[in-house]
Length: 111
Image (cartoon, rainbow, N blue to C red; front, side):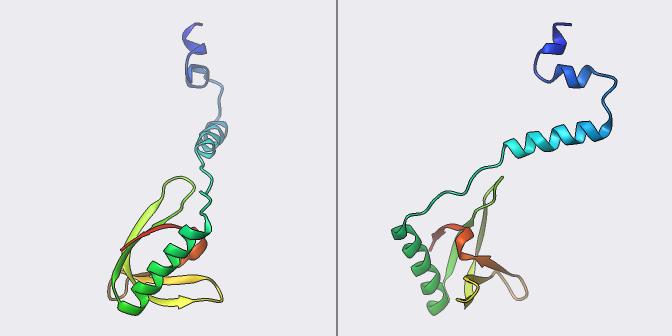
């Protein structure tokens, strides 16, 4: 009985748990790892926007860190289009490889 009370022993040793419950528990455990988006101050936001505009004007490559609740992603490419109405930039990584990225999801830019 002592091992059932340690760690995840209760669920792993139980023979009556149905797969739907197990999946629900695993989904809940993953949701607990969710992070909140960091708040950027105005100066940092302006620096990000300036780096994106410079990449667009000069056709220079930038590395963009995009927020994700579980794991941030980094993309490297050239800003080829800016949609001010939707507040998005088009980051081209090759001939037919591009992504539209929302400005609000960008947490850092490296030139």
